[in-house]
Image (cartoon, rainbow, N blue to C red; front, side, top):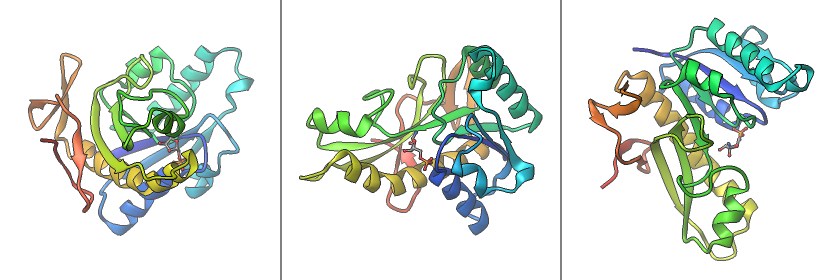
Length: 219
Ligand code: GRF
């Protein structure tokens, strides 16, 4: 099992908390080896002991490349098998992505390929979508464009606002991320010729999350 995970965060850290809860409950047998942030004041950092934290203010580096290099070195120093972006809001540079490619996952609050980037809930509502959701995807240099590993779908309800949609989606994001990390560390995910495979089969469609928090091939 490749169970060492490093988590990148920028904000409140509810996704990180979901991973910590699952580890504590014994439902996720991951070893958290580091929590790293581009924001030294990120509340997420407070959720783990100081020995696991690394942060640096990106603005104090001469340029984007220098920050990315420092972050990549700090991640590498944790020797993670997988690197999980859980509410990490800074765009990762190509060098960083290449260094961890194939073992770098991100959770994004939309049904990718819909709504890459920001304001996903507002954009789903403006488009009149009847369903919304979240995706866990492999990170590639193009923003939110990597192969989608798994998705969770929720209905859009009459009267929904971007805020209500975000609140309703969040617990599903937590379940999706936890299940996706469990799958990643199980060793069932591999990469061949830059394409992700699950159980030896190319990942052609995202896996879906059932109400018990399990991933299954979508029909
Ligand atoms: C989540 O909605 C995640 O999908 C998005 O940013 C939010 C982070 O929330 N990328 P948290 O910091 O994990 O609470």
